Length: 335
Ligand SMILES: Nc1nc2c(ncn2[C@@H]2O[C@H](COP(=O)(O)OP(=O)(O)OP(=O)(O)O)[C@@H](O)[C@H]2O)c(=O)[nH]1
Image (cartoon, rainbow, N blue to C red):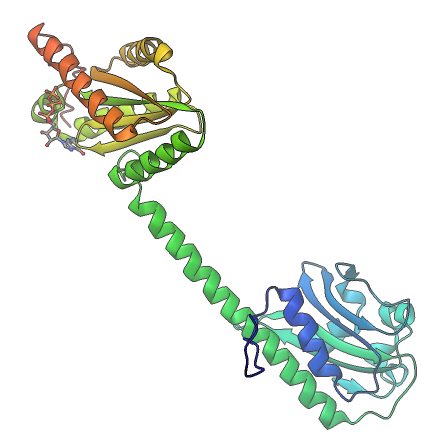
């Protein structure tokens, strides 16, 4: 956005590569060294993140250099100088493969350390000629550039952790802890998403309401744990029957609901039979109701109709004496 006073809003760094490039700019300011690189450690490799180099033979961005063959390795693990006029004159550096490969003579480097004090990478500059470098000025700029990088890393790590925690809390707030299915809040979000899809596309969807029969009977006669196990079993059977784009939720107590994407009115009975058979095969007694919605219809209305049909189904089963006599009756364990 352009501003009249001439100040543009500051753009934050978009990536590690971005901040590495800026760190190089700080480090090379006023330096006669004409090749600069920032790289991060990944296992045994030093992965190049940013390069500002005069010569053709310089490392390329994303290139993986063998960490143990670099001056940076010696600098980071040994007590070796950050700034040297000629690496050929420093025993610890002279035999490093990178010296020959990149034709290094004058060198200035600094280890990069993350906010936990762990070695993270290296920022360095070099020249093909030996040079009398201003050691203090180089060290000052290199350390400043390294601090910019580690501050970015610290903030990034903290932000990542905050975002991860927020995501976990969001997922938890939409999940039923007993069954791992969506809870009422997750269901409401699914219905809203499904409604938008119905409006947007020539789509249809079905809502199924499922209510376990005789859960109170199981709780009272076999125990609450058996009741919980029954709910988990129902959840597993229902979840097994749907596609990844569908939603299965436990709305509370013994009531479940399914949002089935792309199911048309003509498929309603077939879907319901499939559910009934699977639940019956697992020895589970559940009352079911189904309703469909197409473009222009309300999914909430379909939900209400499915709920009313489930209650009808339950009333019929009660009237026929099927509940709770046919519900699964696990035997109580006496230790
Ligand atoms: N074990 C267990 N029971 C629960 C849970 N949530 C609710 N309940 C109990 O489930 C029972 C549900 O009772 P009802 O709504 O009468 O349902 P029902 O016993 O299945 O009777 P019908 O639906 O008429 O067949 C109540 O006693 C609740 O306390 C839960 O998470 N675990």
